Amino acid sequence: MFNRLLEQRKAITDDFSGVTRDRQYGIAEWNGKTFNVIDTGGFVMHSDDVFEKAIRRQVRLAIDEADLLLFLVDVTTGITDLDEALAQELRKSKKPVLLAVNKVDNTERSYMANEFYGLGFEDLFCVSSMSGSGTGEILDRITEQIPVDIENAVDIYASLPKITIVGQPNVGKSTLLNALIGEERNIVTDIAGTTRDAIHTHYKLYGKEFLLIDTAGIRRKNRVHEDLEFYSVIRAVKAIDEADVCILVLDALEGISAQDLKIFSIIEQRKRGVVILVNKWDAVEKDSKTILEFEARIKQKIAPFTDVPILFISAKEKQRIYQAIDKVLEVYDNKQIKIPTHQLNEIMLEEIEKYPPPAYRGEYIKIKYVTQLPAKTPSFAFFCNHPDYVREAYRNYLENRMREHFKLSGVPINIFFRKK
Image (cartoon, rainbow, N blue to C red; front, side, top):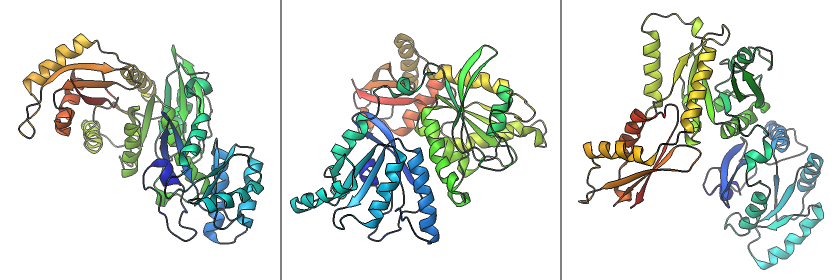
């Protein structure tokens, strides 16, 4: 069912219980609206099995975190003791529940599905997650619950820039937030994973105003031992979804790791602005070349998107933290940039003339016109005779030229090729 909602094979499936242990999460889209979907392991109320006990705790955490619950049952088994136990658990949560009776792929089974009204849920849907039958109705009901303008519907600070602080556990995210606002707003300890939820702080100092979001640390799967930390990843991803600009905090003593690159990739995929802060710089032995070498190593690893501000700070000693905020707000302004069409064409058509797109299958590609599209992140359409023939390398060339001429530092941009 999870794979069906996401339209991709993400979760492993098999014909025996206990396959799903770790929680899976992804983004689904329907009727122009997007939402996060979390797949949990099978809930067993009374069991001493070490995995089933862990899954039980995690399912309860997922229920607490969710806005809407999709309760999946099996038409071929009828109502079981496990179904009744979980139904009781879901009723306690006071959250809206959609009951999906799965494996209903013929008329006889659709009659059998009526038995499940006995569980006491009003919204019952007959589905077959294997064939996709009935999932459209569930998706319609889910998207009905999402306001058209969700930001304005839920956020009284909708007009303020939203800045999310992300990074691995124990790199100094909460220390940075406390240093910025000058009070102990968050619990700061040396224990990785102290912050388990995204905490919003309204910042209004020195003529600057924005929302700061401090998130739980995102760490590699094999380093996660605590149930609460499983869910911290989803909360942090949701906080990235909510942000305009993300501050990715690295540990100067550890350098940039594969997990940092994964977080950077999540930010880039979601087209959020990004500033990299290398924290604990006061603890590093340095000479005149240390900063340049460290910066070069980071840019080499985050390539091809290297037009990212990198600052070296100490949250503990408050070194360069206000300079970092100036840079973050600069990236926020870059994200809102609107380039006049005449200026865009004047500069970019000249760059295209200097280095035209290479011919493909004997066809010459001619780009005649460029315009900026109305979007939340800078997006540009290049109109040409053969849009499908433009290669990735040339797209990168155009992006680099645009970054050279316009203020786009720290902002992932979209480039589209359209038929003229």
